[in-house]
Image (cartoon, rainbow, N blue to C red; front, side, top):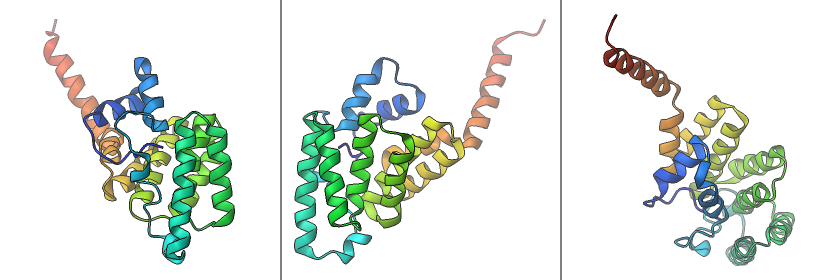
Length: 199
């Protein structure tokens, strides 16, 4: 699945689409979220965490990452149900593996699963995760909360993802910042007043 934290030339477009409505970019968002965008390498960011993972032996962790990479490839090939099944089995085998929760949340979103199930997986990834996995989980949860209309929760999650170095979360946090929105509104109103001559 896609890594929302790796900055690319397309980040600004992705943030705009995610936070400003999909419009004509719905296919682009689907491709970005599913990881089928041409520049994405699914193996590059699978399993990058050190939270609960630090309690998993090196050999077991490598095997989990390989299984997770297969699940991600299945989702990218369009077999999202198989990906969810494989990620669910990984979680059953090793419930401390944060990255599997984050990737299952993405796959569940692609399936159109209930938001509560997706957020539950993201909450578990946040509780167990560290590093990139934690940043990804916060960023993805920010998107989910924004879709639900929870602007404060979305801003908090994007801010946490930004603190962990996620470029998309940084841009999203800036767009969701309530003070920035208020200031932007005041500036826009002042500009309208300047453009419209007084009667």
